[in-house]
Image 1: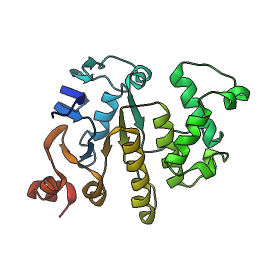
Image 2: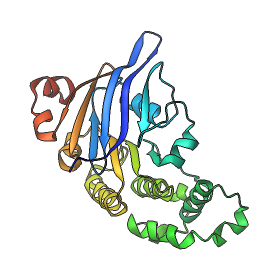
Image 3: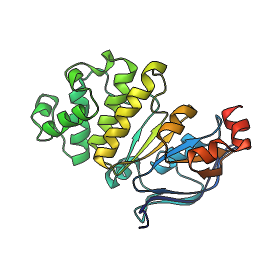
Length: 248
C-alpha cells in the first residue's frame, strides 16, 4: 500500500542577501513516518520549517498539505489545516500554569475567546489533562511553566502542540538544552505520544545518536539543497555526510 503524502514541497527557493537558504528544495513527507533533517549550521533546515508553517514566504516554489496549497497562508491558518510546530525554545506562557497553557491552545484552536477566570471551565479540560498524562507531566499541571526544568518544558510544549490536533508536527531540535542523561527518556515519551495520537513528525537534529535511534528516514541539507535522503544507516554511512555533517 502506498503511503499518503502529507506535505509536498516543490522548488522552494529563498535567499537572504547573499545567503541561499533554500535552493530548489523538493521533499515529500509521508504519513506515519519520523523524518529527521540534518546538516551543518546555516544549511537551511530551520528555514524549511519556517516556510512549511507560514512564518516565511518562499521567493519561488510551493508547499502543499494533503493536496491543498498552503504557501501563501498565515501560520494560524496552517495550524488549523493540521500542521503544528514545536520550536527549539519552548513557546509557553511562563506565568501561567501548565494546564492553562494547554487550555489556551485548545481555546485558540476552536476559535473560542474566553476570559482567564473561565478558562478552567472549558469542555476540553479533560482532554487536556489526558494529554498531560500522555507526555508524563500530569504531576506538574498546576505549576507555572516558568518554574519547570527544561526537559519538562519540552514535554509540555509537545502537549501544547498536540492540543492543536495536528496530523503533522514539525520540531526544531526537540531535546536541545536538555541534559544528556535525560534526552533519550524525553524522546521516548515524545515518540510514544506521537504514535498514540497518530501524528507524523519531522525533526531537525544535530545529535546523530538521536537520529539513528528515532528516525525512519533522514534528509541531509547542505547550502539550501537536499544532498541525499534515505534510511539512517545508509545516509549516516555515506563518506560525504560523515565528513561534512557528522565531522568524522
